[in-house]
Image (tube, rainbow, N blue to C red; front, side):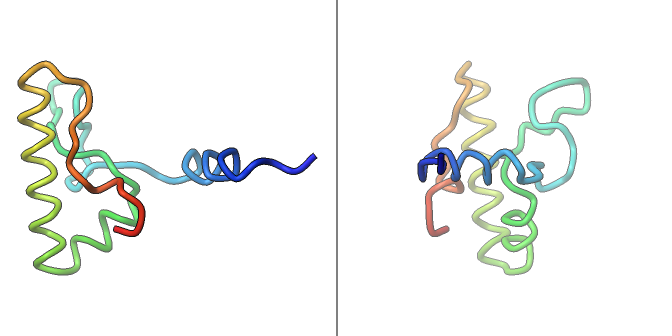
Length: 83
């Protein structure tokens, strides 16, 4: 039986390599950076342009602010489709 579109999307999502812009852990351990966590390909693509680096910096700032406020998730915009 063929997988539903949502199941195929989840398969793709789980196969991606996820990381932070610095490559350090985001929220765990003494070296935690507090940065946004996203697919490595997306981070590498964003790091190539000044606008992309600004988006990463803004997203990481939102993530750090939300974490400091005790929230597990931050609405930073990097995970929206088409971005």
